[in-house]
Image (cartoon, rainbow, N blue to C red):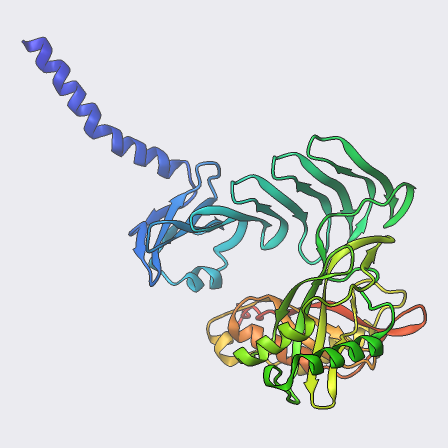
Length: 424
């Protein structure tokens, strides 16, 4: 009886001691401590924080919807001593105690959709998945492609692989079928094919080397649309001076497969667009390395009493023969930014700082347009960066084959607060 009692007391002692020992071991395995509630309700569900079991410097913050399904899980580097989920996130950002570092995984309806891999705020790669969780594509880099680019068939077999360096193909590229048999092989140096045959990804190209075009010319196609609209009848066509911005997807044969209306439109206007563009004749397809490819292209559609016009928006290049330049060169650009950038007072008070990346287009006449924040820091800083880029004077336009073209650029706008002088 005495022996049995001792055994029971020993077991009870271990039961009560175990959670404390585990918590102590968990705290000791990390260089910081999570305090307060680890689960907090949000407007859309719940937010949860937990230690990263693989790293003493990282934690995970996950969001769940109202049904309990996970929507995103973020891996973060934390250099402070204590982390409280209920604290304002900006508090840790201002003290430079937390940063994006590691994997950010996104889910749709609880199903794995995308994983972004960051290294100290810099996006290293993006991995997309099929609905069953199989990998679909691995894109290396962010604003530029650097590293191995991979694509998979739905059955899990690699369909495309090759390395990029500074947005250019470099080395061996292979296209494979669903059984893993090579379909095409090619070797590239600085983006140029040096042996084998062109290896092209099966994707929809936003900026192909050659865009889709109607082989008889824009005027002939617009005459076709005007006659088609007249045949449909005025009762089913909305004639107005309104312009509709459309993204049109073409297949490898040049046929329109999808039409996305960007401009806000009434139901009647949407029906008009469908009616005039339905079953249109094929265009000459877009080309990449002289191979027909799927593409998406921006058009402006005008439906007026005088006729119907589908006007091609000029292609935006990312690589050109002669780069666009801020007049006066990089030093003049830096001087412009230094003299025109206004640090928002509220951002100063909150000690907000960092780099805002703004994309924009230099048009054929050198004017800057389509400025957009592609990687922000805070709405206050983002808005100021957008303002100063949008207000830039004309650049010297870029050129292809000695002709001015529209060129896309991305510019980092740095907001940095001066450190206080400790000697004062």
